[in-house]
Length: 268
View 1 (tube, one colour):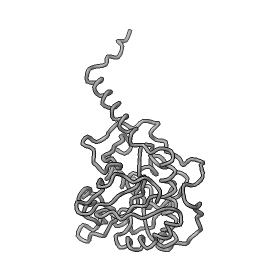
View 2 (cartoon, rainbow, N blue to C red):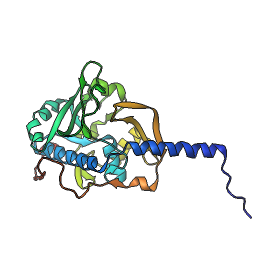
View 3 (cartoon, helix red, strand yellow):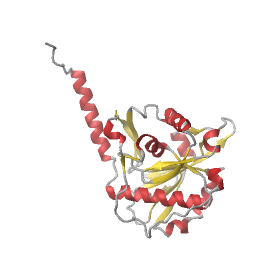
View 4 (cartoon, helix red, strand yellow):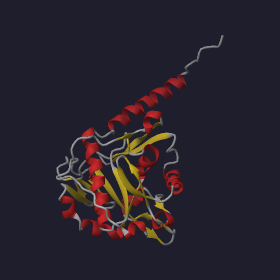
């Protein structure tokens, strides 16, 4: 007769540790209305960028969600596009286009821009700051993170000082950015991403080494604070699903209707 499995003190401590991590992870999830808002923000932004010839690729947790989950990761709480630093003014010039849908562009010194709902609740004033300039962000939001070509390193790096200070190792290869992008599923949407499955997985391997085994979260976006203890827990089969947009009506000021636009910048 086989001996029953023995749970050691070390095992108990590890199980308690991961249970606590799961509880922390649950607190970071968007509610259902916020999920709808985020998908709507992403859809309008991607469509306006296509229409006006602004090149972008999904990045960070958004690209991870698209590859691993097929959409918004269950515990993720924002969305991320990489855009060229040189295109920020062109994006700001679309403020009136965004406003038609009840969206606004927020300038985030040291990082880039954010797109959010005009009527979304503001986060606490003063939480978001680059040390000299304060701004008030709204929740949820799409980060438009500025990148630039680094001739010395021969790669695309974060263009603004706060972002680079926090993530100095982040980069896109020349081929990542300059080769044709591909549209891939993100929930019910199709968004531009680095071309080629192999290249997208290489991006994840260098920025999320454990992306296919672990859940990792470093930051609480609601408070703009990095966790003193990063959230880490093993990936389960349930974590591989994504959060879909509900069937509720649009959260926008008016419904968004995507038109077919031939975008020479994106495809060439």
